[in-house]
Length: 319
Image 1 (spheres, rainbow, N blue to C red):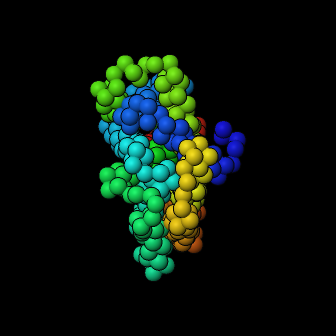
Image 2: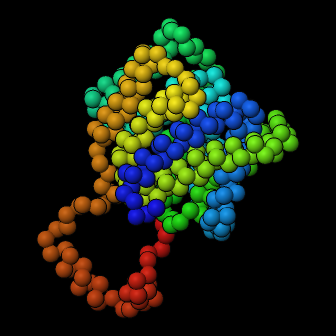
């Protein structure tokens, strides 16, 4: 997977999660939204634990990071009860407003206000009178899933920058499962153990959790947040396509226009954001002769344990 270009990983994640959610909507119709979420995260946690066999977090910082990422993942699953009220493409577009808002907050230029207005226009088109109803509970649930998605992107990026492998992801999904599985069990009980339900739940877990989360974590280790947001903006179109092909949903012309508005607003917002330089000190030019002076000062230092370890290829202590 690491040999593939990072943009290809993100595109695969976008497609996988949307078609997984399409199957998940059918599963939610059979066992309810709590049952679908329980199967999705419970089975995904088991698969990831078997694949990565993670060790427990070391220290408070790693523990807080895992718990925060897992809580955000659990929150993103509010999209499933939203799907009981809304078509897949519309729910996905509303969810995308979370990352769009996050991208807009990185810059305060006039053009970004225009992109925000375009995204708002797309949402208004969803609410415009037409054949498809927009129940308020579905809208609120999708927006809450969007807030969680923004938090997930931030925390997943931080986790990918600080760690290697998929161990932290496996632990985070396990925590998300612990938060959500009890609700599914209380709602459906042993009905979740029916062979057909378990098989469908495994498909949903792989397509919409195990695969996408792993692909996104690998991509976020190599892509700036700007590029990730651009590729994530393709989700409304893929969600509408998945809804049409898998669920037989029919979207009105104005709703397809709404999907286009949100997608264009997302792309424009993140494209206009300044590219991250990787830190406040990166790219700062040193005064003339400062590098040589620093080298002479370093050579004058005694070879203590830290400098000896660095010479052997050791890394600096983790902040």
